[in-house]
Length: 170
Image (cartoon, rainbow, N blue to C red; front, side):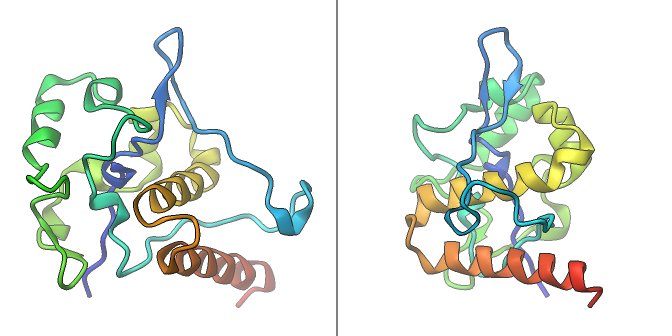
């Protein structure tokens, strides 16, 4: 079973993260959920990739997202990232008809949504990984497909289902 996981992206590297004034990468701000009126729902979100999305595979996202130069310190990572961008802005390995990654098992490290990658690229501590990964995915999905898209609904449903299952011990 093939999954798509790429940060930009966070998609490939959560390009929703911008470099702060002092050169430190900062996470995007998240708004309180309307259904919790600004209070925590008591459930911890657990990030997971949702199949048939691929928002993270749209590598040329525009000025609202960080550039490869803002994300990577290694010039070879910048070069590799740029080499993956097809003429339409999507990753050259993203199969649009199946919404899968053709090199998923061998994708670059920055296409992997994992705590150690978020620590390396964005300075996000492991304890904050799930919250930041979920936020980054939402931002990317909204930017690519829109705030009322089926992709965003599928992601939120998946995250809510996994959080509910965890809190009930299922």
